[in-house]
Image (cartoon, rainbow, N blue to C red; front, side):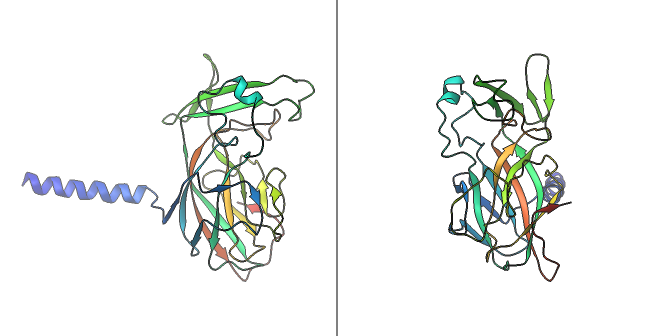
Length: 250
């Protein structure tokens, strides 16, 4: 009788866990990456519409500013790998003129993030010319980051960069936002949000990265708390609707 009860409890627990969790159809590692927007970048994955994808993402420096980083690492940073994006993902049904809906389902924090003043970069670069780096410990259970002994920051993670491929084989920088998406840095684009992108090339070629643990309405010093994360999202192709010219969200 005890064995039967144990089996029943195990089955109930498994069923509840599966219902509460999000089971991805596909998984991508942070090493399946690029840091440009272009129709010439080959996809790392091909999926049908409605697929759920779970991806790991590097933080904005692509590992150069790690949990043990110091000010010398910041001063010697190579800007070439900045903004690594996981992808691109080719969506089978996506055609030019369609809309790609991206449902942000889950964002998992990792155990650290960093914030920096980079000389010559950001709105306050003239006022604060010296390099400064703060590496924050992140508590993934309380979803807080340590700023100092007295201040804990409540985190609201989101991807800073999302986008589809533009209709060009030119390798475009990820830094300025464009009609295809890019470095939008909008803290509203967090879990529960759906972001809509115009499709410019067959397959859409969606990529995501540059995750932020917390950010205000912009990056005044040039960065948010830049952090590696695990992001789960759903891709849906919307057809036969009025075209959009740039990203929208709800």
